[in-house]
Figure 1 (tube, helix red, strand yellow):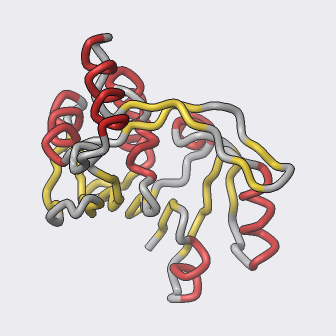
Figure 2 (cartoon, rainbow, N blue to C red):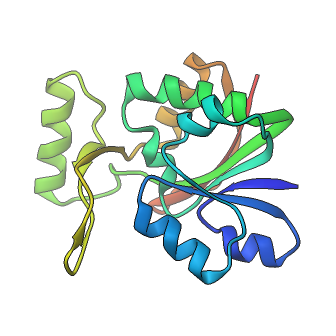
Length: 175
């Protein structure tokens, strides 16, 4: 089994062939330093264009389904993932439903997004640890029904979803 994703070291320890992918050179270096045998520096669409290797599964844990980024960008990412998967392959990932809150600041931000014709949970974030920081990037927190809608438009199906609390696990396959 080949797996692309964030939990690479544990999956590799369990006997799977793994490629750890990240847009952060530091994250890729950390994976290699910890013992992950194969790494790839770049976004999901990059290996789809640059390497013939295909995968049984793409694992997007730790809220990484939110890397679909936006309604428009999600189509490109779904297409790239389709090219990366073997027939019958799947994506397993986690996301967080942003609407399960009563925080007035979060609710106002979501309303503002919708007023601007964006998805309610679309945000731009940057990650910082001590002196290290990423560039800003789009991140799309969404409810399972929103994920189903994006998947359907891209020719995918969400075959299973756990109940959001507020995070959920989804299994997706190309149609």
